[in-house]
Image 1: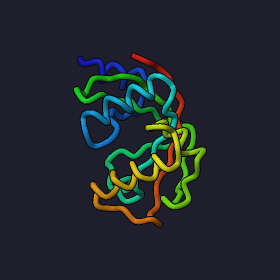
Image 2: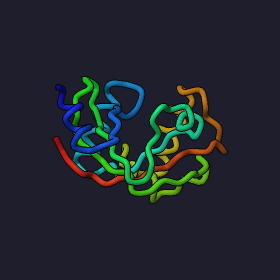
Image 3: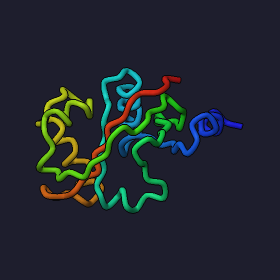
Image 4: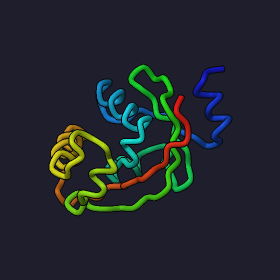
Length: 136
């Protein structure tokens, strides 16, 4: 039995996943969540709809690092659909990335969504806020 399996028993319905699309991003963002700096995330609505297991308010996530090791557990406390162009400074700061500015958020997420092949200024995002439940 793995630690992830043990955590899924402790947090029923939990999904386990890393942030981002590079090993470096997975490690950096998992660390920021564990330190309480990152309390929100987002994804394109199209990728959200394509997921086998989509989060819901109240659901748990086991955040993994680049080696698929659990770093922490979070619980989704709110979700909303928002357009990329309507993201504000408050949400950018909750995302906890870079210098916490909206400018940094916009550039980093534009780059990410372009790599995903889905970027558009008016694209819809699923914006999640979460609380840190456990640091492993």
